[in-house]
Image (cartoon, rainbow, N blue to C red; front, side):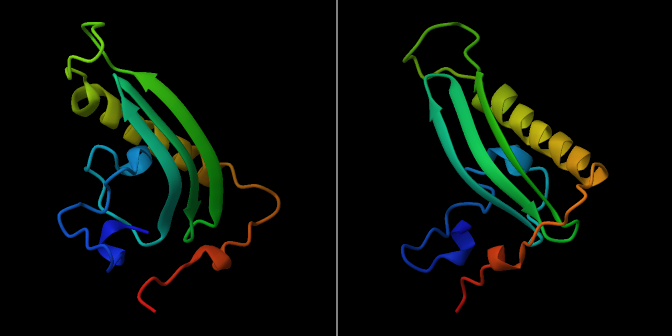
Length: 123
C-alpha cells in the first residue's frame, strides 16, 4: 500500500515513493499504477537494504530483487553522516530500473498470472 492509499493512519506528509528504494528511491520516476513494489527495506548506519517483489501489469513481468549496499564515506558509525540521498537511493533506483528493463526484454516462456495482485485499496 502506498501512503496515499491508506486512510488510517493518514500519511499525507509522505510521498508515494517513500521506502520504495528500487525504481523510485531517487524520486525521479513518476509513480505508475501499473508497477507495484511489494518490499521490505532497512536503513541504518550507512546500510541500505531492499528486498522486493516487483510486478509490471502492463508488461506482464514479475521479478524478485534484493540488495544491500553500504554508503558511509567517512567509515564512522553512528555519526549520522551517511550518503543515502547522494549515492544510495539513486543507485538502488537505477538498479531496479535496469533489472526491470532487462526483465521486459527477457520474456519468460510462461506468462505469470498477476491479476490477483491488483489490489484496490479504496474499497
